[in-house]
Image (tube, rainbow, N blue to C red):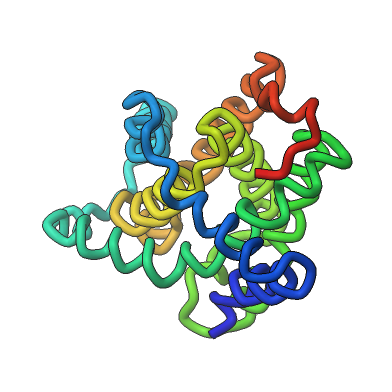
Length: 228
């Protein structure tokens, strides 16, 4: 039930301070879908392309230990995506990007808000590192935190450039989770090899830095102070 902590908190706090109209405004962000098709393509396929690139670079560097057994389950991509979208991601992103992001970036700017949410998002996953059988135990918490901060910047970019669409943010988050489950990125799927994960996180860092340097992290309407 911890998965729905951010969602529950967002709904409760919104109701206390803004009432039902605030909740309706928050949930309406899921109805923002008329967005350039390129954003949909990015949200669905970008992390998969990054993972494939990381695998290719890892091979070029001499790594050969990969386990592709999960590729036989490719037919499960759609049902797994829907499961992750409706249960796991829904409980998170409504709180992180739907509630917290617009308020924090109105006060501190998009970059600081992204960094702050990234750190909180990473710390929120900390208990998973102590649960036996969870993939988080196979990776460094520091590496995970860096990944979450980089992803937070990317997701702020998506949110701000899609007129505040929670639908797109959810698509990106769910697609990222499915990518990790399907492709050999984690040590548990690479026979213990860490290079693919290191390179994947490195490419995410490069992407997030490029977004910041491009000047497109913030949307123009940020200047009005409007909360979407």
